[in-house]
Structures are given as structure tokens and as C-alpha cells.
Length: 213
Ligand SMILES: [Fe+2]
Image (tube, rainbow, N blue to C red; front, side):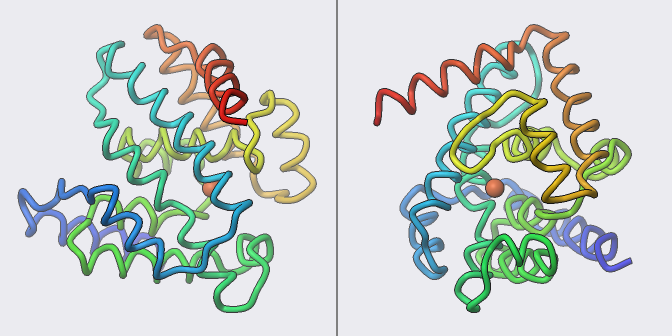
């Protein structure tokens, strides 16, 4: 299966790269990468919502004793939807791309990032759009990737609705999303058991966004 082959390749590249594996772009480098892709205000707002939520979860997870790099989560979040942006650039609606060929676009975005030596981020972006069941999450996803997936699964555009609202909406748009919701709810519970209060974090992110108008 092409997805597993890609992961194996990304893993061996990461190993041979040694220390470079943890190479993280600066904000300026992130902006330069994003400039190469088409940009859209609604998508930018979504990316910012996912980023605020994911970074807050990462920071709370660190405090709860998890081995997480919030800076890595920040950069993954800033770059995670290059996939969709590329879809728009190629003249197709991103909703459509998300359903049909996000896989192919994820690969393209991952290549761009891997060429610059950002292997961990390339790996995360390469997997984007792939439905994450519990087994996949356990076997193939780093904790940073799971935090990003949790934030992205929970977000609806630039809002963070309750789980049930998000699940009901996804059921209509993406009938295959069931296992992903379950695995992300499982992951959220794992964090919550150690004292990461996801719902409280969501409230504070909503307040932050409100303050910014
Ligand atoms: Fe997203």
C-alpha cells in the first residue's frame, strides 16, 4: 500500500538524517514555504484555529508529563493544510480535493518539506487526509502528529464546536470519518486522564480568538 511505503521511506530518511530529523523551520521559513502555495483567507483562519488549539494542548501535555515538542506542533499546524492550498492552486475546490485526492497533494507538500530537510513535518503532512483509526494512530503517529490530528478533527473551519456537533456534520460530509472520531476521542481521553483539560483549553482558545475579533 502506497501509504505504508511512504512511511517506511520517511522513516529511513529520518534515521539516516540523524540529528537533522528534528530540524524545525523558523516562522520566516514557514511563511516562505506557504507563499509558494496558494493562500486563502478562510483556510488561513482555519489553520490559525487549529494551531492555537494544538499548541495549547501540546503545552498542557508537557506540563502533564508527556514528551511533546510544542514548537514542532506549532510548525506542523502552520503547514498542515498546504495540501488543501495546493488543491486550490491546481484549480479545484479544496473540499473536493479533501475527498478525492488529498492523498496525492499531501505527497507533493511532503516532498517540498522533505527536500528542505524538515523530515518530521514532511512525514506529518504526508499523512494528512489519511483517515486515522486507532491502530494507525498507535502504530504510525507521533504524539505531535496525534495532537495535530486531534485539533484538526475537532475544528470546523475556524470554529471549535462540541464533539457531537462536529461528528454529526462530518457524518454528512465524510461518511468514512467514524473511526477517526473514535480514535481521536480515545487519544483525548488519554490526555485527560493525565490532567490535560481539553474542553477548558477549547474555551480559552475561543476567548483568545474572540479578543482578536
Ligand atoms: Fe486542517
